[in-house]
Image (cartoon, rainbow, N blue to C red; front, side, top):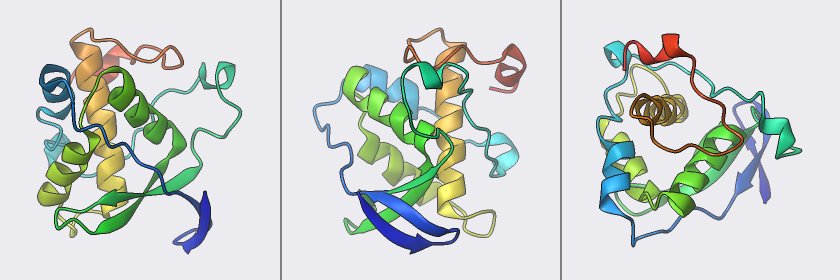
Length: 155
């Protein structure tokens, strides 16, 4: 972990990121499919429920953590999201074999900086991917409880 100064003071940067190029394309498509279509093309930040988080982790699930991820051009960029979002992406990469690099690249291409910053856009894309998987009844991590049915209405 490296600490840097960010928008909200000191933030942690995790210099490791998922690098699973042998992704299972079916699982990857279930997560990536339509991940760019945020509700009304508006950025919003709905956090995944963390009620059972504390049974598995000691860290604050909503602490903003930055990680370097490769940009579309191949240069590393820092993306800051809540720890719960990073842990969920790590789970998708390790257990469901999703290509997280492709997920970031596709969202970078679709991001409209006039609507919100890239970090907020990515947080919304992770949430939308989670909700889409929930609606399809796909597996989720043990620490992640089911989505609220009201959240699945517009998915």
